[in-house]
Length: 488
Image 1 (tube, helix red, strand yellow):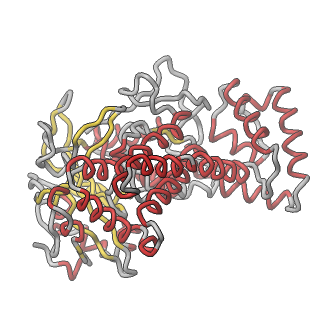
Image 2 (cartoon, rainbow, N blue to C red; image 1 turned 120 degrees about the horizontal axis):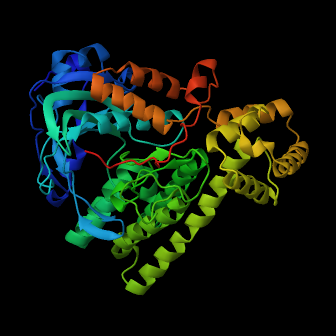
Image 3 (cartoon, helix red, strand yellow; image 1 turned 60 degrees about the vertical axis):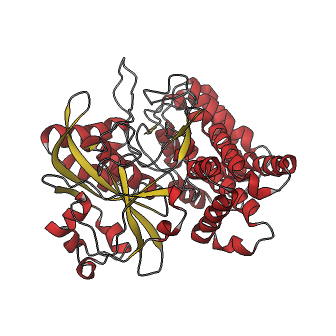
């Protein structure tokens, strides 16, 4: 055990008090020669941890799973999930939850090692992870946080000094992931499928206590839990859509009860606007395409509702009716959040009935002319349209006139509208080709400077600074579509 007094570890292990079916005690598998690649100092400080101590040999040993912090009771969590529509029993096959860090402000965060070795849920896998995908998750999760999108975060990445065999031999790595919890829709599916009603009630009570304690006194806390999760997911997906983020694997084990984004394997950000955009190599039918994400969130939430039916009403038919009535609210909530976000992206403060038509006309033009999603809104923010192909058309001129007329009908000044747009239209996103450049430099040459520069730019996406300019360009034209992989 590592003495937590110098580092600041302050663990609780409330999850281990739940029914044993929900987890297995599991220590990380030690690695040969760990080395720190990157440490998130600002996140460490917010968690109450001392960055200098985390960089020490003892600190790196914790990130590698070679030593346990004082107070840690490591476990692997069990859960299930619909993966591309097919129900499967799952669990942490390559991750170990060290415990729950209690911050100086009393907040609670899971500290999880990803790539830390085999667990009872590994299903034949080696439990290890490759450097590139772990750095990718670090980059994307921190970019999501900077964009203001609820997300788990990344504290550190270490190399293991051991190779991992995939298609070829790759450098092994372990990511330290920080999340408000790792409770998923798939966790509830697991309990509903494997446990008794009392187990489900116990788990639902725990989830309410951990994430939504204000619901404890509600007339129907379980119905309230269902609806707050639906509402939070509606908000989350609207945030994805407003920046062109495509998750890639919206399986129910990747839908969190907290409303945070999780698991950044085959995700990517859209360049040219196209609702059919898919990046994942395994999503051949476009199930999780950009334009399908709201519908797929609704589908996953329906599976959550199914898992709660026993708690919603003793009569099965009435329980289903209650769940269905709640699920219908997703569409309205999502629509409200999306409209609110689009108004902000176009500098609109008030509401008018024809706003949605104005937004849809712009998106149709962007689709027709293959306009870059991020750069089009950035150009609108500053009125600088050079190089934005859609802006050279007569159709855009007509739309622009409608937009300006719409802005003239509100009390706020042009300067106020531009500031609202600047705060809601990022100058930079994790451009796929820039992420790949950083990963290639790290994996092939051990050069982390490319990643460091990228992370610095992505940390302030709404700054619109000169330093960000080189990161705003779309990738060069290619005959080959960009593909992402689940990657381990």
